[in-house]
Image 1 (cartoon, rainbow, N blue to C red):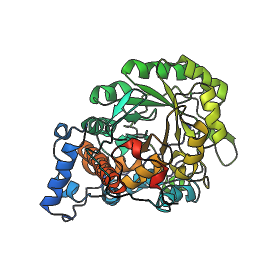
Image 2 (spheres, rainbow, N blue to C red):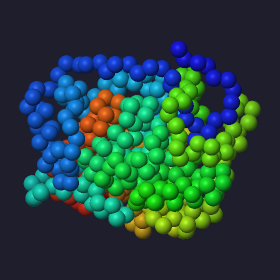
Image 3 (cartoon, one colour):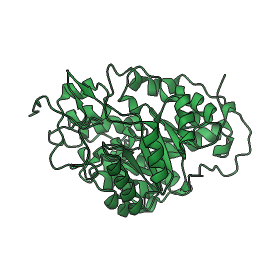
Length: 410
């Protein structure tokens, strides 16, 4: 039964949750033969920096049926309670921006070059002191326990198995200390500014003490967006899923039909937090070249071009559309990353060609989590790495440095 909540104050950014019971995973027939599975496994084990032996084998009929990220999404729909799935998939307003995030990638054409000496394809890099075998990070997502009993701990293990950098959310249901203990890969920590700046500083120091390599400060959410799909689904957070980083520590912003009161969030406070942090601070939510310049001015070590997964303000451009302007403004002074809409290895190539050093994915690894736990999370990353390596080979790019505007058809 779904309970319709009374009008109330909500925490910012708005999160809401289903109270429905989990449905059993629907088993589908094999989509590929055993040879395909062996090929996937071999590719994953041979990919530079990946540790395939660290993750036990998931149910073969489930993982075998996932040969693309869209397959995982379809299976996740059968594994996640309907209301929680709507929360995960939903955007803001009429969800134009949500759709554009993927559609605009499809409008970009690639320009292959043949007979290039590819040598050993290399997808590795070092980003802000963090070695990465693949330019794909796991974006911060709220309360992964909604989608799998092990929640963030399963994500951490999947990240560890593929040496993927995991950006843990302030709104996670598992503490940063527990997650840090569960992964060997670099851990970043995403921070929402609290109503009291001292509380925000406490959270930063706590994340640093746990071993977070980077603080990822979200700057685009003084209020939540108009998430009609969430509202129609009547979400409530299950009481067993806590918020260990914010419980009783964040003044609730209020948004009803009558009033909207935003959280204070200004450049001077961001500058103060950057100066306070002992590790580099990356700003998440930059969509304007002028803001990119200000970010560098206050000392940001990097920035993430993000429209919050299409969950804040509708009809803003897709992030892949905004990325070239931000990269041009930044001109290599700090690393630029992006999230939103990445579903294929070719999408990664396009983002790198437009100036990103790496991309982040959110919903896709949650789909893998829902279907296969830690193994499912690792499987999603391995699919993207395989697709990226194939795209690079077919474009004539032997390493990430070779990916530039020349691979874009113009």
